[in-house]
Amino acid sequence: MTLSRRAFAQILGAGAAAAAVPMPHLFAVPPPKPRAADGVVRLNANENPYGPSAAAIAAMRDAFGAASRYPDDEAEQLTADVAKLHGLAAEEVILGDGSSEILKLVAAAYTSPSRSVVIADPTFEAIAHYAKASGADVVKVPLDAAYAHDLGKMAPAGAGVVYVCNPNNPTGSITPKAALRSFLDSVPPATVVLVDEAYHHYVTSSDYESVAPLVKSKPNLIVARTFSKIYGMAGLRAGYALANRDTIKKLDAQKSWDTMNVMALVAARASLADGGFVGNGRRRNAETRAHVVDRLGAMGYKTIPSEANFVMIDLRRDVKPVIAGMRTHGVHVGRLFPALPHHLRVTIGTPAEMQQFVDAFRRIEK
Image (cartoon, one colour):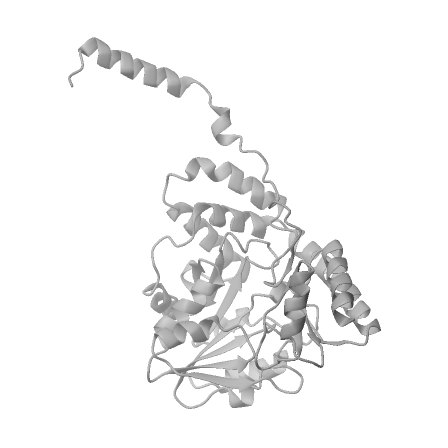
C-alpha cells in the first residue's frame, strides 16, 4: 500500500501532537497493593514480612520509564554504591540476581570433578546443588555442639570451595569471629572460602563480625550479600559479592549479561541510601523474635540461639507431622532438614503473624 505525501504528513503530525500531550497515566503508577489475602501465614522462606523501604518502592515507580532500556547504567551506579559502602574499588564488586547467582558463579568457577565443595550440615544447600552440576563432590561437615561451623574439619586437601553461611541457615547460629579469622589465616591459597552473609544485618552478638573488610588482604576470600532479607526484596532478586579483582574477573567470566533488571537495581540503590531502614528492621525483628522465644519457652520448648530472622525449635520429636499439621491451620513453616529431624525452622513474621503461629502451634501440640 502506498501513501500520498499529504497522508504521510498527516500521520507525522498526529504522532508529533501525541508526543506533545502529557501522558501521566503511563508513569503515575499507583502504589503497590499487598498480595491478595489468602488466609495463609508464610513463615517458611525467611522473607521480610514488611517488604522494601518506601524509598525503594518510589525508586521503582520512577524507573518504569527506563524499562525499555538495558540496565547497564543502573548496574554501574549500584556497583559504585556498593564499592563505596565497603571501601573497595568497583573492580572488587560483582552484582548478582540475588546472592543465589553469586553462589552459582562460585561453583562454576571453582569446583569440578577434581575440586570439591565443603559445606556444613545443615546449611543453605544451593551451592551444593550448583557444584553437583559441575561434577564436584560435596563434602558435608556437621555443625559443632554450639551449632557453629566446625572449621577445623572444613579444609580437606584439594577442596575447591569452602562455604560458610554466617549466620547459618537454617540454624540462625553464628560462627565466632575469632574462629573464622583463624580459619581464613590457615586455609591453603588454592582453596576459595565463600562466606555468605545473607543475614548479616540482623546480628546483634558481639561475637560476630563481617569478614567483608578482609577481602583486601585475603585473595581467596569471597563475601556474598543479598537484598532479599532485611531489605525485603526477595521477589526482586538483587545481591552482590566482594572479592579480589582477579577473583571478580573469574566470576564475571561465568556470568550472563544483564541478569539484574532495572527495578531491582534502582530499588537496591535506594535501599542502601535509606539510612534508618536497616536499624529499624533489626530492632523490629529482634523484639518479635525475643517475644516468640519467650512464648515457646513458657510452653517448654527450647530454640537454637538465633542471630537471624528465623528460629529453630527443638520439638523433641519428628518434625514432619508438625509441618503438615501447621499447614492445616494455614501456617506454612520451614521444611525438614535431615541433619536436625526434630527441629522446626520458623521465620519471624509480623507480631500478628507470630500470634497466629503460636495459636496454631498450641493446637498442634495438643
